[in-house]
Length: 278
Ligand code: GLU
Image (cartoon, rainbow, N blue to C red; front, top):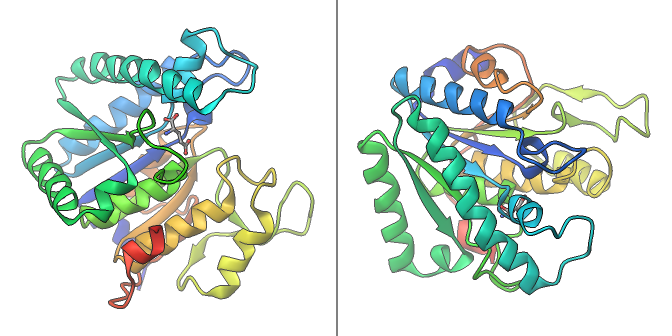
């Protein structure tokens, strides 16, 4: 089976992009050029008849910049205030850019509670399905202003995998500041090998993430990405980690080109999503 070729047939695609990929490293301002390209690529996917969900970080980063709180350690309340300001600003920017292509978007903010309470979960699922049916691109983030340490998802890698599972999407693309999975931290170990495909996410791979988490392999941490891979693939979706440097890489993935690391779907009926995120 040519797994890369299969990616051409994906219908419902979740794309996650992180704060560091959306902002200029030197100043912390939004990278509007990259955002514009991303918006174009995603709208074009819709034009190809695909359904698209965007999981976007950046609320805290944008709010922090706007409120002049750069370069200092933030308290939880400050972070939540930044997120409240930043999320609105972020959505305004997305709305403006998407409207240039006449593409409707929606905002969905989630917390762990969304998943834990059956009724909440059902309503969230129904909303996603309705929006997709209407041709809208839902833009998802964690509801940082009301999440606390106890109820937060932790990171948007995991959140995007949860959204993939919740919406029965068939592909998750994690846009990151790394090319994909390496057998070790390539900055430390020059013998580290790039892994282009993971057909079965076994303990060997999960252990790889543990040993590299928190290292320069990725700011999101490879461990978080491997947890996301577990949630996505066990729920029946493929997942690709790709470098967000050039967002056109999303097109390469959809055309079946050999870019990033592909984790092949491996639906596991015994997998309990709620247990995993508790
Ligand atoms: N929800 C956070 C934000 O939008 C980001 C979390 C993450 O980067 O994983 O600022």
